[in-house]
Length: 286
Image (tube, rainbow, N blue to C red; front, side):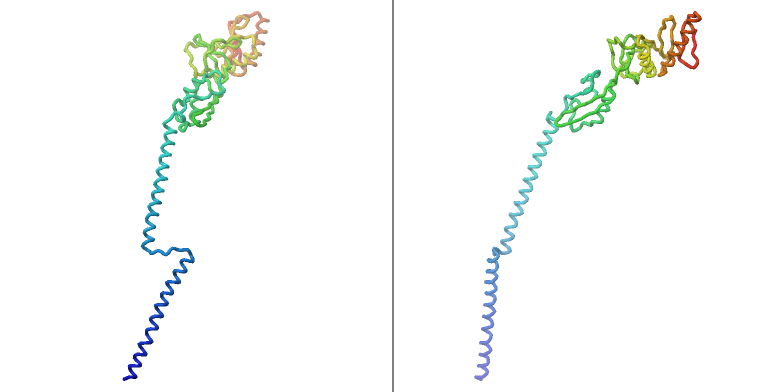
Protein backbone atom coordinates (compact mmCIF):
# COMPACT_ATOMS: atom_id res chain seq x y z
CA UNK A 1 0.00 0.00 0.00
CA UNK A 2 2.77 2.33 0.88
CA UNK A 3 4.57 1.24 -2.19
CA UNK A 4 1.69 2.15 -4.51
CA UNK A 5 1.18 5.44 -2.82
CA UNK A 6 4.81 6.16 -3.19
CA UNK A 7 4.68 5.23 -6.81
CA UNK A 8 1.62 7.36 -7.39
CA UNK A 9 3.17 10.19 -5.58
CA UNK A 10 6.25 9.75 -7.62
CA UNK A 11 4.29 9.80 -10.85
CA UNK A 12 2.36 12.88 -9.77
CA UNK A 13 5.53 14.72 -8.88
CA UNK A 14 7.04 13.91 -12.29
CA UNK A 15 4.19 15.72 -14.20
CA UNK A 16 4.51 19.13 -12.49
CA UNK A 17 8.08 19.91 -13.60
CA UNK A 18 7.06 19.17 -17.21
CA UNK A 19 4.14 21.62 -17.07
CA UNK A 20 6.23 24.39 -15.62
CA UNK A 21 8.87 23.80 -18.29
CA UNK A 22 6.34 24.26 -21.09
CA UNK A 23 5.01 27.43 -19.52
CA UNK A 24 8.50 28.78 -19.17
CA UNK A 25 9.16 27.88 -22.84
CA UNK A 26 6.09 29.79 -23.99
CA UNK A 27 6.99 32.80 -21.90
CA UNK A 28 10.49 32.67 -23.34
CA UNK A 29 9.06 32.60 -26.91
CA UNK A 30 6.96 35.68 -26.19
CA UNK A 31 9.96 37.49 -24.72
CA UNK A 32 12.12 36.53 -27.70
CA UNK A 33 9.43 37.68 -30.12
CA UNK A 34 9.26 41.02 -28.34
CA UNK A 35 13.02 41.34 -28.41
CA UNK A 36 13.05 40.45 -32.15
CA UNK A 37 10.40 43.01 -33.00
CA UNK A 38 12.17 45.65 -30.96
CA UNK A 39 15.43 44.84 -32.74
CA UNK A 40 13.77 45.35 -36.13
CA UNK A 41 12.03 48.50 -35.03
CA UNK A 42 8.58 47.03 -35.70
CA UNK A 43 5.67 48.24 -33.61
CA UNK A 44 3.88 45.54 -31.83
CA UNK A 45 0.30 46.14 -32.89
CA UNK A 46 -2.65 43.93 -32.99
CA UNK A 47 -4.70 43.10 -36.10
CA UNK A 48 -7.55 45.26 -34.82
CA UNK A 49 -5.40 48.36 -34.46
CA UNK A 50 -3.87 47.78 -37.99
CA UNK A 51 -7.31 47.81 -39.59
CA UNK A 52 -8.10 51.00 -37.73
CA UNK A 53 -5.04 52.69 -39.25
CA UNK A 54 -5.73 51.52 -42.86
CA UNK A 55 -9.16 53.17 -43.04
CA UNK A 56 -7.90 56.75 -42.47
CA UNK A 57 -5.10 56.16 -44.98
CA UNK A 58 -7.56 55.04 -47.69
CA UNK A 59 -9.86 57.98 -46.97
CA UNK A 60 -6.98 60.42 -47.19
CA UNK A 61 -5.93 58.93 -50.54
CA UNK A 62 -9.41 59.39 -52.04
CA UNK A 63 -9.56 62.97 -50.76
CA UNK A 64 -6.25 63.71 -52.42
CA UNK A 65 -7.37 62.16 -55.73
CA UNK A 66 -10.62 64.11 -55.71
CA UNK A 67 -8.75 67.30 -54.94
CA UNK A 68 -6.36 66.78 -57.87
CA UNK A 69 -9.24 65.99 -60.24
CA UNK A 70 -11.15 69.05 -59.08
CA UNK A 71 -8.18 71.35 -59.60
CA UNK A 72 -7.64 69.84 -63.07
CA UNK A 73 -11.25 70.48 -64.06
CA UNK A 74 -11.06 74.07 -62.87
CA UNK A 75 -7.87 74.66 -64.85
CA UNK A 76 -9.40 73.01 -67.94
CA UNK A 77 -12.49 75.20 -67.69
CA UNK A 78 -10.33 78.32 -67.34
CA UNK A 79 -8.25 77.30 -70.35
CA UNK A 80 -11.37 76.68 -72.44
CA UNK A 81 -12.76 80.07 -71.49
CA UNK A 82 -9.52 81.78 -72.45
CA UNK A 83 -9.22 79.96 -75.76
CA UNK A 84 -12.79 80.19 -77.01
CA UNK A 85 -14.65 82.89 -75.07
CA UNK A 86 -12.16 85.74 -75.33
CA UNK A 87 -11.04 87.69 -78.42
CA UNK A 88 -7.39 86.72 -78.02
CA UNK A 89 -7.61 83.77 -80.42
CA UNK A 90 -10.05 85.15 -83.00
CA UNK A 91 -8.98 86.66 -86.32
CA UNK A 92 -10.10 90.23 -87.01
CA UNK A 93 -7.28 91.38 -89.29
CA UNK A 94 -4.59 89.82 -91.45
CA UNK A 95 -1.26 90.65 -93.07
CA UNK A 96 -1.20 90.56 -96.87
CA UNK A 97 2.01 90.33 -98.91
CA UNK A 98 2.71 90.36 -102.64
CA UNK A 99 -0.35 92.33 -103.74
CA UNK A 100 -0.43 95.46 -105.86
CA UNK A 101 -3.62 95.25 -107.92
CA UNK A 102 -5.88 93.47 -105.44
CA UNK A 103 -6.49 95.34 -102.19
CA UNK A 104 -5.97 93.76 -98.75
CA UNK A 105 -9.65 94.39 -98.02
CA UNK A 106 -10.67 92.28 -101.02
CA UNK A 107 -8.32 89.48 -99.98
CA UNK A 108 -9.55 89.56 -96.37
CA UNK A 109 -13.17 89.44 -97.48
CA UNK A 110 -12.51 86.51 -99.81
CA UNK A 111 -10.61 84.58 -97.14
CA UNK A 112 -13.63 84.23 -94.84
CA UNK A 113 -11.42 84.71 -91.79
CA UNK A 114 -13.20 87.63 -90.15
CA UNK A 115 -14.22 86.56 -86.63
CA UNK A 116 -13.00 82.98 -87.03
CA UNK A 117 -11.11 81.20 -84.24
CA UNK A 118 -7.47 80.59 -85.12
CA UNK A 119 -8.01 76.94 -84.18
CA UNK A 120 -10.62 76.51 -86.91
CA UNK A 121 -8.56 78.06 -89.72
CA UNK A 122 -7.81 75.66 -92.57
CA UNK A 123 -4.87 77.25 -94.44
CA UNK A 124 -5.47 75.30 -97.66
CA UNK A 125 -9.15 76.23 -97.82
CA UNK A 126 -8.31 79.88 -97.21
CA UNK A 127 -5.62 79.80 -99.92
CA UNK A 128 -8.05 78.25 -102.41
CA UNK A 129 -10.69 80.87 -101.62
CA UNK A 130 -8.24 83.74 -102.13
CA UNK A 131 -6.91 82.20 -105.36
CA UNK A 132 -10.42 82.43 -106.81
CA UNK A 133 -10.12 86.21 -106.90
CA UNK A 134 -9.74 87.38 -110.52
CA UNK A 135 -6.40 89.07 -109.92
CA UNK A 136 -4.80 86.28 -107.85
CA UNK A 137 -2.87 83.43 -109.43
CA UNK A 138 -2.01 81.62 -106.19
CA UNK A 139 -1.95 82.19 -102.44
CA UNK A 140 -0.15 80.82 -99.40
CA UNK A 141 -1.50 81.07 -95.83
CA UNK A 142 0.50 80.97 -92.61
CA UNK A 143 -1.04 80.97 -89.12
CA UNK A 144 0.52 81.62 -85.73
CA UNK A 145 -0.78 82.08 -82.21
CA UNK A 146 -2.58 83.83 -80.84
CA UNK A 147 -4.51 85.14 -83.89
CA UNK A 148 -2.02 86.05 -86.60
CA UNK A 149 -2.63 85.12 -90.23
CA UNK A 150 -0.34 86.08 -93.11
CA UNK A 151 -1.48 85.61 -96.72
CA UNK A 152 1.17 85.83 -99.43
CA UNK A 153 -0.26 86.12 -102.92
CA UNK A 154 1.06 85.88 -106.45
CA UNK A 155 -0.97 88.18 -108.64
CA UNK A 156 -1.77 87.68 -112.28
CA UNK A 157 0.38 89.96 -114.41
CA UNK A 158 -1.45 92.35 -116.75
CA UNK A 159 -0.35 91.87 -120.35
CA UNK A 160 -2.60 93.99 -122.50
CA UNK A 161 -5.28 96.63 -122.13
CA UNK A 162 -8.61 95.35 -123.41
CA UNK A 163 -11.38 97.82 -124.17
CA UNK A 164 -15.02 96.86 -124.44
CA UNK A 165 -18.19 98.95 -124.11
CA UNK A 166 -16.15 102.04 -123.32
CA UNK A 167 -14.24 100.52 -120.37
CA UNK A 168 -10.59 99.53 -120.41
CA UNK A 169 -9.49 96.45 -118.55
CA UNK A 170 -6.15 94.90 -117.64
CA UNK A 171 -5.98 91.36 -118.97
CA UNK A 172 -3.38 88.65 -118.28
CA UNK A 173 -1.94 86.21 -120.80
CA UNK A 174 -4.62 83.63 -120.05
CA UNK A 175 -7.26 86.17 -121.03
CA UNK A 176 -8.50 86.75 -117.48
CA UNK A 177 -10.01 90.18 -116.92
CA UNK A 178 -8.30 91.59 -113.84
CA UNK A 179 -9.33 95.12 -113.06
CA UNK A 180 -10.43 98.32 -114.75
CA UNK A 181 -7.64 100.57 -116.01
CA UNK A 182 -8.09 104.25 -116.67
CA UNK A 183 -4.58 105.24 -117.72
CA UNK A 184 -3.37 102.96 -120.47
CA UNK A 185 -0.84 105.20 -122.17
CA UNK A 186 2.11 103.37 -123.68
CA UNK A 187 0.31 100.03 -123.87
CA UNK A 188 -1.11 98.37 -126.96
CA UNK A 189 -4.87 98.77 -126.81
CA UNK A 190 -7.14 95.97 -128.02
CA UNK A 191 -10.51 97.44 -129.03
CA UNK A 192 -13.11 94.68 -128.70
CA UNK A 193 -16.05 95.15 -131.09
CA UNK A 194 -18.37 93.22 -128.78
CA UNK A 195 -20.76 95.47 -126.85
CA UNK A 196 -21.40 93.20 -123.86
CA UNK A 197 -19.74 94.70 -120.74
CA UNK A 198 -16.94 92.84 -119.00
CA UNK A 199 -16.47 92.18 -115.31
CA UNK A 200 -13.44 91.10 -113.26
CA UNK A 201 -12.96 87.38 -113.64
CA UNK A 202 -14.41 87.20 -117.14
CA UNK A 203 -12.34 85.64 -119.91
CA UNK A 204 -11.47 87.02 -123.34
CA UNK A 205 -9.77 85.26 -126.27
CA UNK A 206 -6.37 84.12 -124.98
CA UNK A 207 -5.19 83.61 -128.58
CA UNK A 208 -5.95 87.24 -129.29
CA UNK A 209 -3.98 88.29 -126.22
CA UNK A 210 -0.98 86.24 -127.42
CA UNK A 211 -1.21 87.78 -130.90
CA UNK A 212 -1.49 91.30 -129.50
CA UNK A 213 1.64 90.79 -127.40
CA UNK A 214 3.59 89.72 -130.47
CA UNK A 215 2.33 92.68 -132.49
CA UNK A 216 3.39 94.98 -129.68
CA UNK A 217 6.98 93.77 -130.06
CA UNK A 218 7.01 93.53 -133.86
CA UNK A 219 5.25 96.84 -134.51
CA UNK A 220 5.96 99.16 -131.56
CA UNK A 221 4.52 102.06 -133.54
CA UNK A 222 1.14 100.31 -133.53
CA UNK A 223 -0.95 101.85 -130.73
CA UNK A 224 -4.25 100.00 -131.14
CA UNK A 225 -5.73 96.94 -132.85
CA UNK A 226 -9.32 95.86 -133.26
CA UNK A 227 -10.72 92.49 -132.27
CA UNK A 228 -13.82 90.58 -133.26
CA UNK A 229 -14.70 86.95 -132.77
CA UNK A 230 -15.05 86.53 -136.56
CA UNK A 231 -11.83 88.09 -137.89
CA UNK A 232 -9.62 88.10 -134.81
CA UNK A 233 -7.10 90.95 -134.64
CA UNK A 234 -6.98 93.63 -137.33
CA UNK A 235 -5.57 97.08 -137.90
CA UNK A 236 -5.71 99.85 -140.47
CA UNK A 237 -2.73 99.83 -142.84
CA UNK A 238 -1.14 102.92 -144.36
CA UNK A 239 -2.39 101.74 -147.75
CA UNK A 240 -5.85 102.61 -146.53
CA UNK A 241 -7.05 99.03 -146.13
CA UNK A 242 -7.84 96.77 -143.19
CA UNK A 243 -5.48 93.90 -142.45
CA UNK A 244 -7.02 90.82 -140.79
CA UNK A 245 -4.53 88.79 -138.83
CA UNK A 246 -6.66 86.36 -136.87
CA UNK A 247 -5.20 85.14 -133.54
CA UNK A 248 -2.29 83.04 -132.34
CA UNK A 249 1.45 83.23 -132.00
CA UNK A 250 2.45 83.27 -135.67
CA UNK A 251 2.23 87.03 -136.18
CA UNK A 252 5.84 87.29 -137.36
CA UNK A 253 5.13 85.04 -140.35
CA UNK A 254 1.92 86.87 -141.18
CA UNK A 255 3.66 90.24 -141.10
CA UNK A 256 6.35 88.90 -143.43
CA UNK A 257 3.63 87.83 -145.88
CA UNK A 258 2.01 91.24 -145.48
CA UNK A 259 5.23 92.99 -146.37
CA UNK A 260 5.58 90.93 -149.55
CA UNK A 261 1.96 91.67 -150.56
CA UNK A 262 2.34 95.39 -149.90
CA UNK A 263 5.37 95.52 -152.21
CA UNK A 264 3.48 93.61 -154.88
CA UNK A 265 0.44 95.89 -154.59
CA UNK A 266 2.60 99.00 -154.70
CA UNK A 267 4.26 97.76 -157.89
CA UNK A 268 0.90 97.06 -159.55
CA UNK A 269 -0.73 100.25 -158.27
CA UNK A 270 -3.63 98.38 -156.72
CA UNK A 271 -5.49 99.69 -153.69
CA UNK A 272 -7.25 96.81 -151.96
CA UNK A 273 -10.19 97.18 -149.61
CA UNK A 274 -8.74 94.61 -147.19
CA UNK A 275 -5.96 92.04 -146.87
CA UNK A 276 -6.86 88.77 -145.18
CA UNK A 277 -3.97 86.93 -143.53
CA UNK A 278 -5.95 84.81 -141.09
CA UNK A 279 -4.91 81.73 -143.03
CA UNK A 280 -1.27 82.32 -143.90
CA UNK A 281 -1.20 79.33 -146.31
CA UNK A 282 -3.73 81.08 -148.53
CA UNK A 283 -3.54 84.87 -148.07
CA UNK A 284 -5.94 86.96 -150.07
CA UNK A 285 -6.98 90.54 -150.66
CA UNK A 286 -9.80 92.38 -152.30
